[in-house]
Amino acid sequence: MSILANLAHALAERSVRVVDLTHTLSPNFPAIVLQTELGQAAPFRTEEISRYDERGSGWYWNNFTCSEHTGTHFDAPVHWISGRYLPNNATDSIPVEDMMGPACVIDCSKESVLDADFLLTKDFLLRWESEHGQIPERSWVLMRTDWSKKVSDPVAYQNFDEEGQHTPGPSVDAMQFLVFERKVLGFGTETIGTDAGQAFHLRPPHPAHDLLHGAGRYGLQCLNNLDQLPPTGAFIFCAPLKIEQGSGSPLRVLGLVESR
Image 1 (cartoon, rainbow, N blue to C red):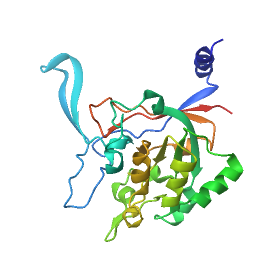
Image 2: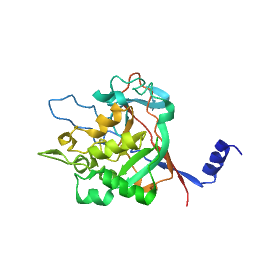
Image 3: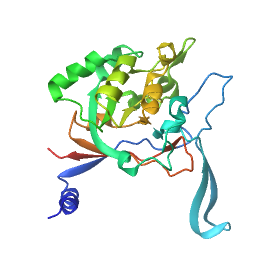
Image 4: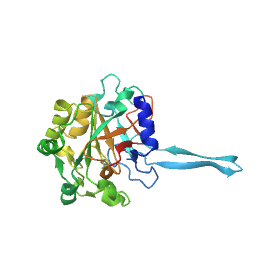
């Protein structure tokens, strides 16, 4: 049997299962909030066109509006100033081969429960590698914090106070290590951004955005069900909408996992 036939057979017999890593996109999903003086992302909204009625007796459909960076979503390099001049940097031009790859899941859930401002460091990643093996080139590194379990409470999920947002994310040295030493395809989180809530205090500020996109790499945010993936061995698909010069896109992220 061919490789693809073997995969189809494995999916059919459930020896490979599909894990949905995506939140339901609805008007209730928390939208990204920036400082009040800055431009803001539109939240997800739907408008019913018809529902088997006088507006269209045989069909149901909706219009929807939202920011490119709404719900579980993809960041393209053009999203950040560091990636604005790169070739093939938008959702309509990035190589389709980059929309899939092996996943390494870094479990920071215990640390994130204890410290909402927890930063994933290079040392943490090296300790993970000592147990699970070196992070392969062109892999997706997914930071598991179990923050997705807070999504039903937008206040807890955003976690703002007078100092701003408090959510876990990567440190500068972690992103330098992943981008330049491990040459990963991208970095994903369960929080509303790939960076920590207080990442504007880091140098450079927002290192996940700055370093990933400056190197032509990608981000995934608002992931779900990372606790259903093993540390290594999963394979993810994360294809954004093909928006002309799109900086990002909501998407359906799927993980393939071998059944044990």
